[in-house]
Length: 288
Ligand code: PAF
Image (cartoon, rainbow, N blue to C red; front, side, top):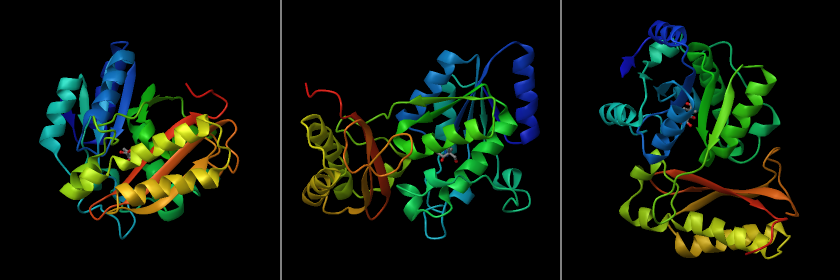
């Protein structure tokens, strides 16, 4: 496995892979890799002859009061995991390599899909994500790129960006990977205190409660949101709700009456970390 730190090295590496008729898969990450990331790398290795993992904590997607400085960085561990997962190369650029002039003048932003959910409280976040992902797509020129469904809004936005801007890339969504107690795997879980870690599975449990309510016929999003909030207040008192929403999975707009496919999504701030999670439910399906 090659460790690449410059854009030119990546271009040369990918060109050599293409000369060997290999298809190229990209797994963009911010490092501190866990089983969720490894599942993306494995999915990429199944579908592509050459897998490139990018490990870059992208400063432009963090707001001034967010955790850029303290975001967990574990490069040695990440390299070992990428190698074990079957990556052909890891792209680990410096901030100067990606942003030699500081902030780029050109940015990629997304209209309404970025307004709700995380976009409502993380101003500029999705512009930072779309800009760095566009740069990675232009650097790696992959055939396929793999993204986890835990970041459902990010996935939806990137799919739309690829479609609107004609990137010749297939976006492959991969299911959320969970701890045995249901907590969605995230690099930020390691920043939780012991007490908050013990409470955090309530997030997924509350989403499962929402699923049951919808499948049993509850058609009032307000009642579902209130039930989720009550469960989190009871079982995770260390967490402050940022949002709980029932939205359409394509438009990400609020749905008042869930009578078709919906995404139930939430973000909760604990002292050490803000966690997000979601589930897709088809309200038209019958409860089993
Ligand atoms: O999901 C992430 O880890 C990041 O938002 C991404 C896609 C790697 C862009 O920095």
